[in-house]
Length: 485
Ligand code: NAP
Ligand code: MG
Image (cartoon, rainbow, N blue to C red; front, side, top):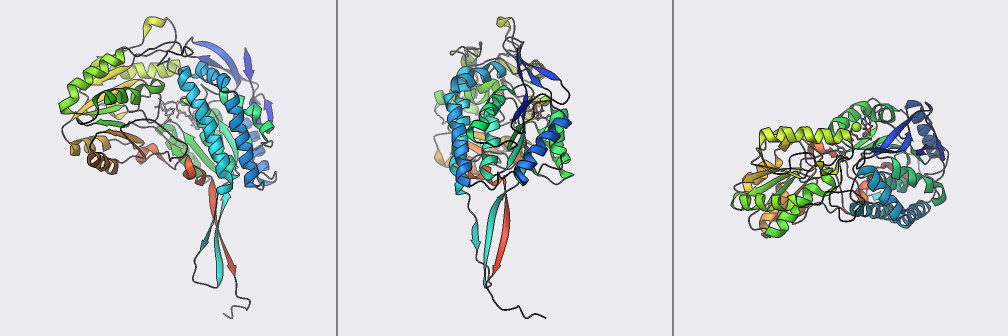
C-alpha cells in the first residue's frame, strides 16, 4: 500500500501526529492508499514555510516572466503524465476515465493560461488633478490558504494554485480528505519545475482538523474555498477574526430551462448531460430542469428512456458514462434524498442504488417529475445524479421559478428564439449562463456565483485579481515646499 506524505517546505513529510488515514477506490470500496493526517501543528509548519517564502524567500520578487515559465513547465509535466494522472483520479474519485482525461487536460490548460498571464498583470496611471504622477500598482496578496473539494480534485487544485503563483503569492492548500492523491503527485514535480521550497505547501487531512486551522491562522492573508454553502459560511465567520480576504465558490441548484421551440433532440441530451455528468457531483449541475408545458410530457418520457440506458460501470472502462459516487457517506446522503424525492414527486427513472455491481457506491441516474419548486429536492443541493423536472407555462413564470432559489451559480436556456434567449440571459440572477448548452467551462472565461453560491471569480483575468492587492502611489512633481505653514 502506497503511503502519501504531505508536502511542506519542499519536502515530503509525515504529520506531526504520526497518523495516517485511508483513501478509497469508490468502485471497489477498497483502501488504495494512506495519506498523512495533518493537524494544526502541520498547518503551522506549512504557513511558516509559506510566510518565509513570501516575506524573505524572494518568490514575489522573481520576475513575472520567470513565474510564468514555472507554470508552463508544470503544464507540460501534467500533459506528459496525463494517462497516469487520469487513471489515479479515476480510481480515487470514481469518475469515468474519459472525463478524468478531460479534467487533467483542463488542469494543464489552467497552468498554461496563468503561465501566459503572469507577465501581463498591469497597473494604471491615474489622472489626478495635481502636478503629480499617480499610479496604481498590483501586488500579491501574500499567503493564500486554499481549500478544495473532491469532485474535480486536480482541476480544483489548478484553479487555486495557478493564479496564486502567477500573482506571486505563496500557498497552503488542503485537498479534500477523499481525493488527495493527484495533487500530491503534482507536488513531486514542483521543485523540478522551479517552485522554491515553501512556495507551495500541501497539507492533507480533514476539514475540522486541517482545514479550520488554515482559515484561522493569522499568518494567512487570504482564503479561497470551494465546497458546500454550510462550510463556506463557517469559513467566512472564522476568517472575519483576522479580516482575511475571502473568496467562496459554493454550490448551486442550477436551472436548466427548455422552451418548446428548442431543438428537441439537443434538449434531451443537454438535460441529461447537464445533471448526470460526473455522476451529478458538479457544483453547476443542472439539477432543476424547467420544461415548457407543451413539450413537458414528451420531454420527461424521452429523458427517462435515455437515462435508463446510461451506461453505469467501472470508471476505468472507456464505455462507462457514470461511475460510483465518491464515497460511502456521499452515497448515503444521495440515497436519503431519493427517499425524500419519492414522497415529494413522481419517479420517471432510477430511484435507488444500482445493485448490479455487488460493490461500489453506484446510484442510478434518477429523474423526478411534477416537482414543486418548493420541494426539498428542488431547493437543496444533492450533489448526485438526481434531476427534478418542473413544468412552466410562460417566460415570466420560467424566470420566477428559475430565480426562486437561494443559489445563483449557473443556468442554461434552450431556445431557437434569440430574443427570448437573450431576455432570459439578462433576467437570470446567476454568475454563468449557457445558451443551448450546459457545463462547458473554459479557463479564459469567468467562473463564480451570485447570491449564496458565493463571491469572487475564478479563471481568466478575474481569477488573478483575487490574488492581488492594489497599491496607490503618488509621486509629487513640485520641487518647491508646499508653503502651507
Ligand atoms: P465540504 O465539507 O464543503 O468540503 C469542502 C472542503 O472543505 C474539503 O476539503 C473539506 O475537508 C473542507 N472543510 C470541511 N469543513 C471545514 C472547516 N470547518 N474548515 C475548513 N475546511 C473545511 O464538502 P463535502 O463534505 O466534501 O461535501 C458535502 C456537500 O458539499 C456535498 O454533498 C455538496 O452538496 C457540497 N459540495 C459542493 C462542492 C462545490 O463545488 N460547490 C464541492 C463538493 C461538495 P474534508 O475533505 O475533510 O471534508
Ligand atoms: Mg466534508
